Image: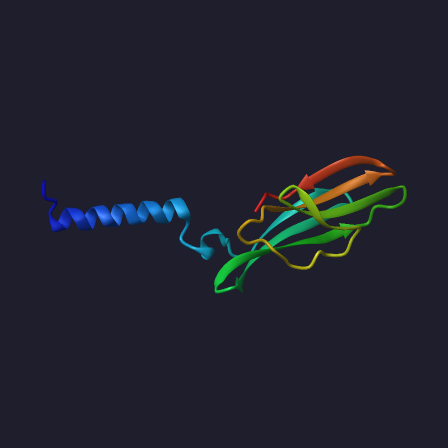
Length: 129
């Protein structure tokens, strides 16, 4: 059975489109552009900030946990963290994390916690990126 040229071109286009969808279009496929998500509650709040940056020949996301309010008073305190692949990679009581690479192989989220002495009162995390 012979397949005509038009059918072959259609099949190649369909298979190519399916491959791009399945595998992603390349490094830029996960780039969201600049976005921010408010996290936290009460006196412990932050912004999970995500922006694209050019790395190794492609666009990739970078993420920052940027505390906006850390005014809990003793015995209350705030804790801000960055989690990557279920492991804490950064923590602070009020300083920002700086931009961290969030490209392929990374599944990051920023969290804000409010504590009373050693008891966790609330925890809020942004979406996993």
